[in-house]
Amino acid sequence: MRANLKLLLSGPALFALCSCGMIQAISPDFKMPKIPLPKLRMPSMSTVAKYIPGMPDRDKVDSDDPTVPFNSRGTIGFGHTIRLEVYEGARSPDRIYSGITMVNTEGLLPLGEAGTARVGGQHLPQVAEAIATVFRLAGRNTRPITVQIISVENTPVISINGDVREAEFIPAFEDMTVQQAVTVTGGRKQGSTSRGIYISREGQRSFFRSIEAADQKWSPRAGDIITLSPDI
Image (cartoon, rainbow, N blue to C red; front, side, top):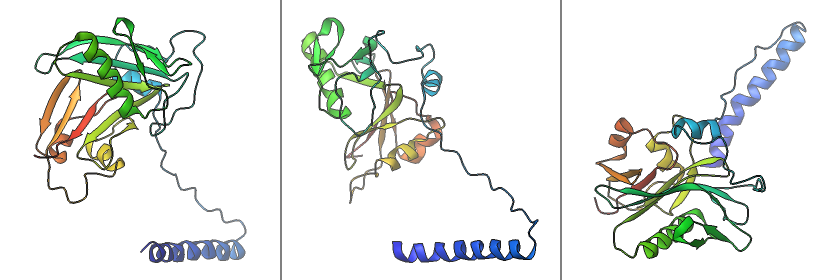
């Protein structure tokens, strides 16, 4: 299929190149018009600021905090600085933590009075779970804990989990739609017949009957958790 597609695309391209050469030979003064190319909008801290009003400009705990390369599908290690919020409860969630924290040389992430989470060498979905476990044990209760990772090393992110091939975090960008976010992860598991979707923001969980319904009513922003329901 790909080979056929390449042949179909290469034909018009080759014709266009030949046509340009023929035109130049006939009329040396002829200049081809410039065709504007679409610009890819990558995440930036200005985007994060738009998503989360009042946020500081940079993910930096102090002057010694290094700038470390970050890949949303890679692992977390020393120097990675994470901006996050943690909520307790479901119906009326309480925000029990909000801040910027950096992974230390031992792979530990300080979380204030709650303790530290061992996150070195883990991917972001596992990092979020490790953080939730720390707060769950610190509170010694059974109320739901929601960890909303907003950005890592100045890259705004959104979490996708549930009825997907693999839970992951993806970079957020301006004007992103729910459908785009789900498509980036590869969509639902093969053979799935479910359509329901949950989206969490600031500890509150909203339900939509389908991705299309969510697209009409929801504009994703950094820190959101999109969960594809496995049974609805």
